[in-house]
Length: 318
Image 1 (cartoon, helix red, strand yellow):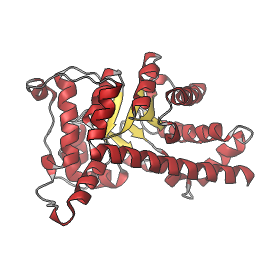
Image 2 (cartoon, helix red, strand yellow):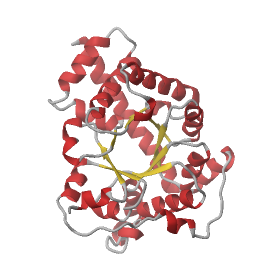
Image 3 (tube, helix red, strand yellow):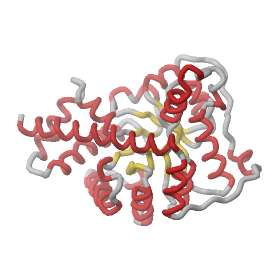
Image 4 (cartoon, helix red, strand yellow):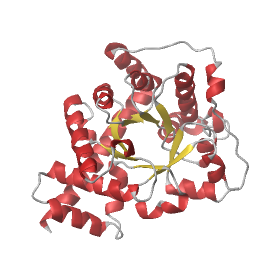
């Protein structure tokens, strides 16, 4: 049995792509998208007609609404292929605006519902800023489920759990990137692999905390650089994986066993933690990696959202 099939015995496998034509061969349950993935997809010849067609049908609308139409159109195509949920992201430029994030989430969900898709099949993706987490708290109370992304630190995860967020996406690869860059020539790849990988350690700590304290929020490890990171998190609730790494797992027959276990986590001697806004902001500020990576992640997603805006504007005048 290949490693992808073995992994599916312990963990829900999610595809991290906007490329819905590639999905079926890996049979993931869910799929996640973000502005960068959608931008990449719409620039491919396979998907250009879909962009053109969607923009042509809605060109009379304000630009942000046309963008949402494009994002949801990709989501609808993905939902034809996956049996579970799709994650669709709120514009990263709203990451520090709770009210605007809630309004955009309502708009996205309204478009899905108008297309006949129930709330159980959509996760609204929001950056794990304090403002984003508070928006998710409100949305969850309304039955709109959220996926809190760009999550790099324990305090972000704790605040999400306390807000009853449906799912979080703690990043692995970007944490690994930061520590590797900081270490420079002193980085020892072999010593920092597997369970010692700083990104793997971060997700493991979050998973153990949630299971120990019966926090219902689902943990979905994200942003992987290699299959070693994925194997070291086998047993996590979900893992969202790029098509390249899904192909590598599918191509390997090496045995795989779970690394994370909820029953083991419940036996750990851990202490409950809670954050208010001030202590959350201080804890995040104390973590240089998380502070830098959160800011950088928002900047990159915002830049790609702006590029997507430009493409859509050009298509609507074409």
